[in-house]
Each structure stands twice: as structure tokens, then as C-alpha cells.
Length: 277
Image 1 (cartoon, rainbow, N blue to C red):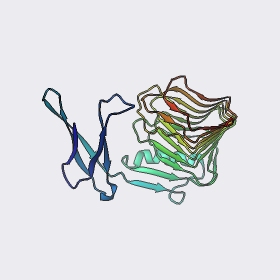
Image 2: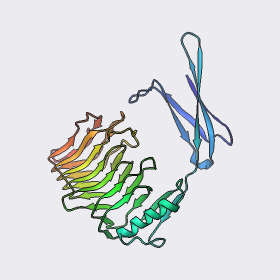
Image 3: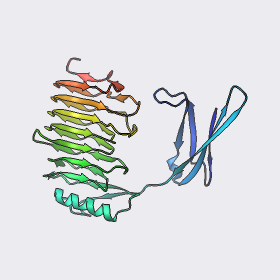
Image 4: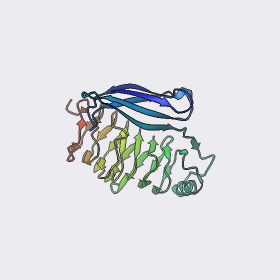
């Protein structure tokens, strides 16, 4: 077979880098496209597969890829009040009513402790913490169908009960800390929760993946995190897809159970660090 990208308009903004036999999907054959961001243009391309059969027949399959630029807007405490969790929830409500739904908004949070929970229902945005930005109650992401939320450098500190972060939509956690919760981070129906470079400490369950819905893999690397003194560090109860979850360079120490995988999901623990090694 051959795969080509034919632009409908503009220059060659999309190309096919390689075709290969997949190892972890149900497809018979796959192609890896690339987009050269330096050209910075929108456009549409037809992806054309030409398949030569052994009986001499030729099949041509076509699908369309459309590339659009997504604006990113960063908001700080100089733009909107963000000193309390009430002000944050008010800002989310305002953005849900007035903001461009095709724009990604990044909230650059001040170094404060938010006493109370934050809920993203009709609007999802990225959260970037400053030094010691802390939530003491549940942050809930329940924005089905909207882009995943990136949460970076935020501390979630509980009192031994409840959930630090509860998501039914995608959430990417970077350099976050979850400490002293019944459940540190929970990914439920329709979610794909990913954690890299995070710390899960003294929780009943550190990271609980329980997606019984239809979300596909949007990040299989779970490396560089520390799981210590949890009852169960990672619980994989249900996950869709076939990607292997890679816990490369994660540290597990002092946990009752390191990884509980009742879902039988593909997990790579070959490069983890434990108290025993």
C-alpha cells in the first residue's frame, strides 16, 4: 500500500512520515502523519490510501484531515480576581457564558491556599500553579466533550477523606502533589487521567483509573512520579483501549500495594524504582 497527503489549498502542511504494521491496535495497517508547525497555516488535506491486492485489484480509500489554529489565552490575578475559590468558580462561570469555546484558556493561579472545591462543568481550562498553590477540597472536571484540562504545579492537600481531583473528562497532571486523601486523583466514566512527575503521598488510593466509558488513549506515559505511603498507589479498575501504560522511572515506596490491576490492563513496570531495589 501507499499513503499520500494531498492538500486542497495552500502548501504542503501535512506529510506521511511512515506506514507500519501496528502492535497495539486493531488496525491492519497504520500511517504516521506529521504537521510542520513552522508553516503556521490552516488548511485541509486528503489522505489517500492506495492498496494493491494480491488478485490484481486496487483499492483507493480517502479521508480528510483539517488543521486549524487554536488560540491560547493566559489569565492572571491581574486580569481577574483569583484570591479565593469563590472568585475562581465565578471566573469559570463567566468564561462559560462569554468566552470563545474554540479558545484554550490558561489560569495562572497565585500562591494561595484555596479553602473549598473548584468545579468545571460547562467550561474547561488549564490550571498552572505558583509556589504553594493549594486546594483543600475536591477539584471536579465534568466537562464532557470539551478539551482535556492540563493541571500543572498544583498541590492537593486533604484531611484523609474525599477525593483530591475527580474527572469524568480528560485531565493531564504535571508536577502536582496529592497528599492525605481517601483518593488522590480519580478518573471515572469517559475520562483519561494522566499523571507525570507527580507525587502521591499518604492517600488511601493515590491514582484510581476507573473509566468504564469510551474515551480513547490520550497519553500512555505515566513516568517520573513518586508514590509513597499510600494504601494502594495505583488502582486500575477499568480502562479502554490497548496502549501500554508506562510507569518508567516512577518511585514506589511504603505503599500497601504498588499497582492493583484488576482490569488486566497492559502496564509496563520494568523500569520502576521500589524500596527493594
